[in-house]
Length: 305
Image (cartoon, rainbow, N blue to C red; front, top):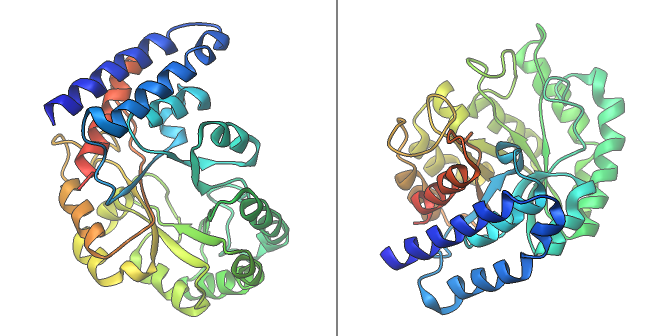
């Protein structure tokens, strides 16, 4: 493991040096050499990642990097997926052999979602279009949101979501695309958001009864709202199609500065036989690109069980 860490530190230093250069042409000239170094890490000099967890990282949390730079960082750490990338940027992912592990772009925003029937006329054609785009690109997951309650009852919100989502799920099933509803906390980050707890969200899954509808179980958000993370995963994993991480409190690194044991959580996810993605979605705290890259490397190691 010390040799693995040494090689990764070397790659991260190279990455920091590359991303300090301008213009982008200077970066692209180093891509082949960087990829060769990454391949060496993964094929013989030292241990690769264990392969039990499919790792990913959310693009927005590393927004200081261009998508090209983030692809290089991801590959240097031995995994090959990025969350929350839309169709316009998929060619960049394909260029680097990176999976779009959670596609986006069909949603209106986080507040105007499927639980409010006023937005169905906009959402339905957008999702039908994106379902085809996702399938044609060879991807699988497309994110969605319930939106806010705005005084609506929980039961009415469920009925509205079922009515709207039922209009797109036949297309999703036909194309092998999974619509993934993200769970948020309404206590700290997303006041009034409807899918802010596991039982209500599972009830939506049960009413829709479709293999093309799952929950994006965000561990950070659900720790804030209800805790009991590992038992929830053990008991209800059949409804969960994707996972997000972040440290609680603060939504920063998943190390020992926060309250969750992500190694134990990753082991619980692995034990369910889960074959989807566990995506890092913490906001890194270091001031430098190299430091933020090291935060991601550490998070991947914590979850690589």
